[in-house]
Image (cartoon, rainbow, N blue to C red; front, side, top):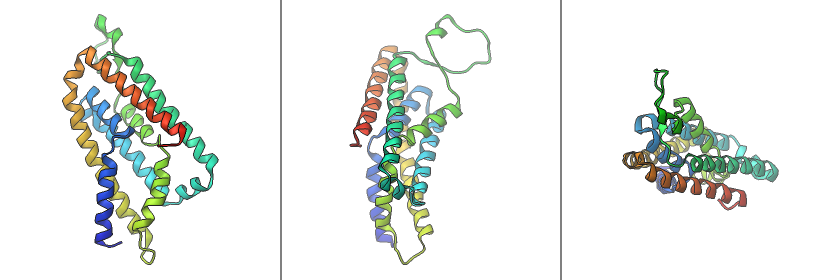
Length: 217
């Protein structure tokens, strides 16, 4: 892989990562709910899943999935079901405001109407599962990466460069979407605005899940 091939790869991945998919939407929604600093855990969860999928694809799992439609179908259904579940959760949340943890045992009377605040581990875990929800990233990487690999050169260093580049550009767009989510945070303190936002988020997540089930994502 030469510099020209790498620059072409960067250009393609830059615009690919900019597409508002489940990861970006989840990052935006998380930052809007809990703030920029706490939303980092969500970003790390999504990024961990993306890197894991790319590494697995580079190791040959993508080819195995392509040769086994049944296994791919199982992963697709599981990923779609998780996205739909997230959509249902967002819809049920409505206009409720997440309640951050407090050491005081007393709760205000309005606390019963709030959504329990999950910690950094919970946000990382959700981000991780969202990142794993679309198994087609495996097949994409399996088909896309070889276009930029020089067969005569050692494969491992080239895969490391490609995966690292992808991860950095993905992180860049997480930050862009997170800033967008942060600017929404003040408006989302209004229950009516939050309710509309959660309804839209729910519909988009369910839509992504439905598209995955139909095999067109």
